[in-house]
Image (cartoon, rainbow, N blue to C red; front, side):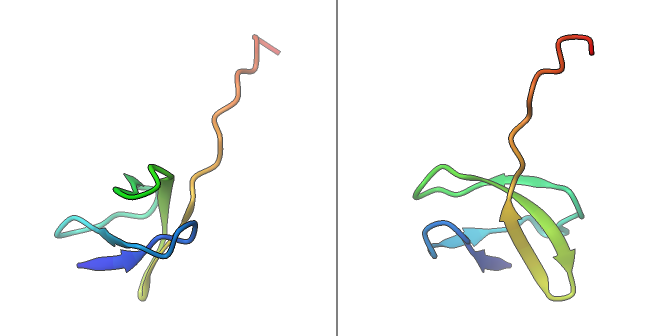
Length: 55
């Protein structure tokens, strides 16, 4: 199963059974992508993880 990268439009291969919130990496632009929908399967740029410094 494949979908397109929202950053560079290249084809990204999904696993046999993708899951919501699964993180993938685009092979062309190295963007981290998050599975946001399964029907149809849709990915979006994954949010950047920020440090909270204990706050």
